[in-house]
Length: 358
Length: 78
Image (cartoon, rainbow over all chains, first blue to last red; front, top):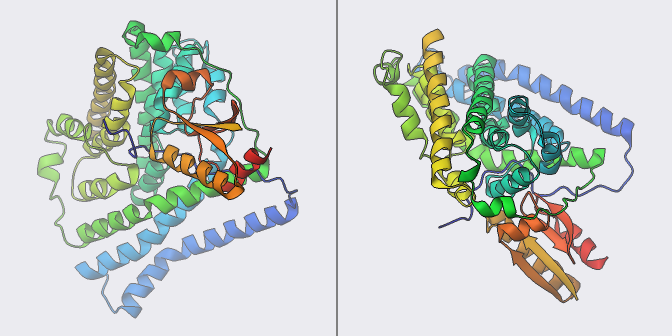
């Protein structure tokens, strides 16, 4: 089994604790200045893209090439700017949450309330699918109910800031909000169902016998948190920008050339079987949020139904084969099957729900 | 002689951490026993919930992140 490399992490590489005293007024001024610059650049992007396309390149916005070029020039900096700002903000937010603090909050919580909390904490706690097993052991031995632990493990990879930013930048806040809301719902309910099924004996026996040592926590100061945010930006944006570029280029090409409603017949609302097929194809596929966006972009733009597309995206990034293989170390096959089944079913429902109401 | 433990199931970030520890030791011309811990029970016993983690003489110094070279050197010099 190849256990290496394939992990999706949202923890920055290094967070050097800064011991130097901070000049607060300077820091705040600098922060405010950067934010204003960000805003000015962001609001000027669209006119700039139009100007560059029409006046400099001499292309008409009505032509295929012109609309593709304008789309690319506008969307690339827009998405990268959004990504930088939000990844930074989420990075700073994440510095307040550690796996052990989250465990303390969740230990001994009642089901349902615990599931809701676990889903929410799954979004903000730094998580790496490679350390899913130590985290699982830590949670379960500290008395976090099994279903609550699953709510956390489902929410953590599925709802991540890269997915949210890309949806926000390319499809608007409504789609982003839908994704977060329904993803959270799946995490809460699937965890709750797994808890109700009383599957504790399908956890490998040694897990409950493991002696969990005292976890030590690092204390972060504010400069440390800002650095944490900045390191997140460097690492995450540094890693995903090529995907974003390719994604937007694909999107731009489709925008310009592929006929409208190209996908409608196969992935439109009328094709009822498209949702289960999208989920079944999505589960074994493995990609990070940035890699899947070009496909999502292509599908939505050309008439695929929103529910079908969201279901596909959730199946790809929420249920990943590598993570399931890693979890096999602590879960017996039946529990793995139930986990995939319950989450897959939740995704299916979300797909149908949106196709129905949108 | 110090014992440096690097906790991780064998992911890329854990290997990177181990490499950094070795570089730090070489730079400081220190001898230490570097132990790679990939057994989950041993990780649990040490209280590690997020990998990679680094412990020096049994005390966890960092968890869930790759420490910087300067940081590791600082711990080794303690």
